[in-house]
Amino acid sequence: MFPVRVYYEDTDAAGIVYYANYLRYAERARTEMLRGIGMGSARMMEADGLAFAVRRCSMEFVKPAKLDDLLDVETRLVEVGGASVIADQRIKRDATDLVRMKLTLACMSLAGRPARLPAPLRARLVHMQATVR
Image (cartoon, rainbow, N blue to C red):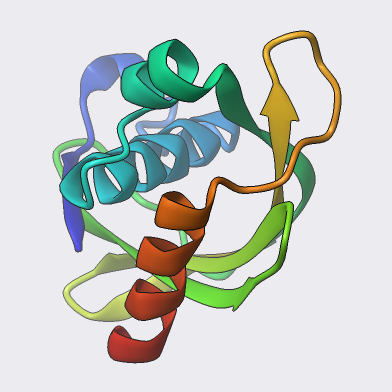
């Protein structure tokens, strides 16, 4: 779980989170998930010349988040392929789903070409997929 507080800058004139900001929250959660297994974005770029790019994203908006809400972003890996990862993410308030997302992340070289996941990263992701349900 990755906690996020809703600030004024995140909301529209009605005090409801602007839809695009949910993508930011999800990105932060994925970034911290990778950092937590020792594979932060900067390390991947510097050591391996690789990065993840969102290839596909679908979102279902269930309920709105509002100014000052404390949210949790839950990330679960569904599939770890040779060059991609499929993840489910849920943004919750008090254990209630507000947004459900399904993403396909492609491993890319810094030149923008598809690339295989490095074996150490893939092994860590497979382990995470198996242990986090």
